[in-house]
Length: 606
Image (cartoon, rainbow, N blue to C red; front, side):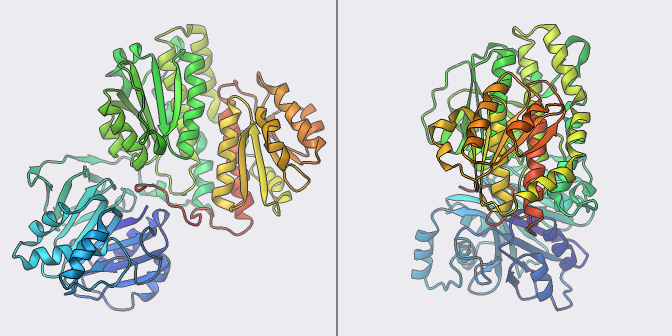
């Protein structure tokens, strides 16, 4: 969701703030704004480029707060852009999240004589702090007094004109990272914009209130106790968060898939024994041996990874698996028995619905596990055990390399669980060898990028697509449809190929192409039959097929080939091909694939 960034130190704040915002643009780009003590607020519709045009003064301030908005309350215009101030122009607030009780708070403030300028929920915070300051509380206590009145989620930055070097930040449900430098400190919604300045990061927990100056940092809680939050050293480099010569982050991140697979596997395969070594799960290995049911929760692409994990874990480990949309799981009354484990999948580790699903599982006494990419994230901290992806930062809003990594990690989890149960050593060794060869196979798919582009261009005027697949290829079909929707704004649906005659076939005509994922696997012939049904009704078919399959051309208009791989892992190669198809389809239309309209990278509000 929204991007927040702050600096306090001895350098000029304005260029640091603008650069920080530019590295957060994947989190929101409806509007942007900056406040630096001693100067007027500057804000604008649009993102950093528009804000930079308005920064015309010689700003000497050495501290400030900055914001990129993904609109929730109020239209994305200049008035509703953050920061928001109080009546006196002394307190300024930046907010990522939603204040659920803002209407009642606003009514009380209006009755007390406060004047509001925006339609946002955020503005009530500035006025509440103003009132607390007039009640003779100091800045720090006024903030804590205000936070106790709020209900909802927030990652906050608060600046006070009368204490210009101090920035207060607070977290409740929205991520906040503090970067600890030498004579300067930074605050952001994730580590990416801080890495250029320092690799020492402190991750706040829900209920934390941090008071930051150029040389000090303290953390209090809403219970008004001092707490010691340890810092962590981030190992990846800021260069990983740049485009590296590619026209878009999305393409760069897809091209990193072979390396991402290698990083996910590094040190985690015991080849000669056909086992997976997952240090993050070893602490709960005995509990995992006793589970009789696994529930996987996730949202969007992570949910599709979970569906692939269901096939993997059930076939290799014999553990019954259910996959739930995290946004639905938290509002059901899930039946969780003593030997149930719940596994959360989230690239950011901050997805609100997924986090709340884990908390619900913990309330029921379940063993909780996580597969996350972001070190120090909330899901990583709150689950009992888990596995990091080590995929590096993913900047493109449409997830690509993170999904590839998630599927590889789920393969390792399936191997880990399977070898403690009934999976034979020979089968384990076969899977380990297949995983080891996967990076090279992924490279071969990526080498076909230009050929995939040519196929995508044939269908550039199509407004509707159907994606079909069976077994492992069914979640791949869902992912292919989602990627195309996200970045090109065309209508696309993913279906199990066996469901064609139960409705989707009615949509097919010469203007409604189908992408069929049809590797040479155990359900190959059945998917081919579905392709024939489509062609009979004059529908065009693009096949994602196994290299060397010449017969598939007889039932296809175009074929994108992927290398031959094991049935369990060919889905990874299909996914990479589908992501390339979506990328080229949208990029050649001139669309900004890194920033799809109405979407943001990490969904930390409902």
